Image: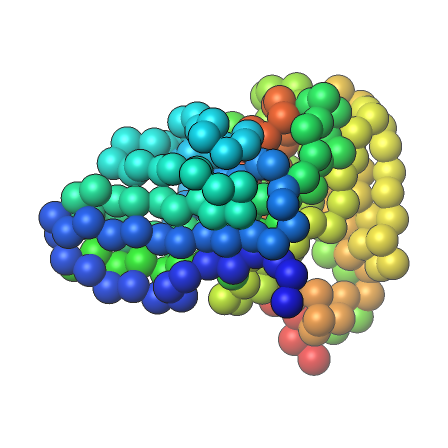
Length: 117
Length: 110
């Protein structure tokens, strides 16, 4: 089915380990995003990408690395996981290069629940 | 710093009652979006409001954008159990950078 998929759905890891969360979309959307969702904070942008090989930092990028070698994939890597990175991670995509007028629509994946022990 | 404040944080009502969720900020947005999120799923866009004072209706849901484009409200008439979910507002500053509120958890019981 077309859409945006994230894997794994659940992940438990230990402090200091490297973890990679996968995101794949089948719409050929130009823009992709990584958010984390924590109680009381809502969704916070980690990194985003405007196209293959173009990425930029969001609000909370520290401790995370992204890459985008292909349009459809946007993996997020925690190089050395910390307990503060326990969260639910959402990937999203959007096909429109907007003008800031607010007509852009984000399509979200179902999330990855990550626990760092 | 939470630029977008949503209130209340939690709302529990009976089926058939009305409810209103508020989204406030000191910042001016080019537009504002409302999403609904169900357990174990990502948020789904409900509506985008662009013009100050704009009112949009989606069946029993009414969305309003403040005249100064700093605040918004979501009103649900005759709530149904299917309206249960986390409602998130998101202010759009520039393309691709949305500022989300913390969300309002709505529970509608039969």
